[in-house]
Length: 126
Image (cartoon, rainbow, N blue to C red; front, side, top):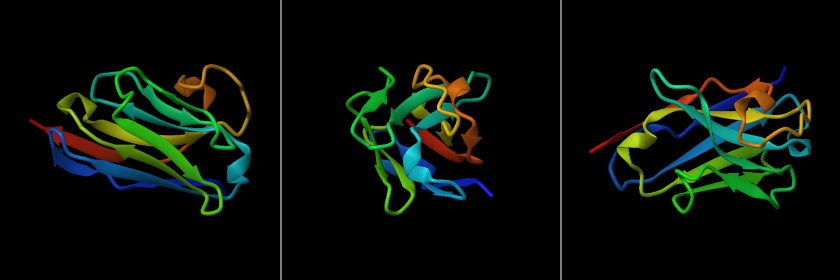
């Protein structure tokens, strides 16, 4: 059974940091590109960061460039998102996802990912 489980969310003040983790099981984790997405109330789900299966290429939304870092540990089947200099506008539910169908579409488009975790809430207060 394929499973993605996020953890590490919480509440922080502006300028704070959080590290999200996503533990994968039930499939060959290292074969597929993965991404972090977020969805705020009343808004569409948006791509935050993505990383290719080898970990050699990463992509970021303009809104998080220079503040967030995506990484993966294929030996541990775990995806990470280090979030620094957090802002209130970063408040959202954060999801990790995997593209096991290899759609090869735009890397930050959530429609190109078919496996999803349940999400972890990040709240940034001013």
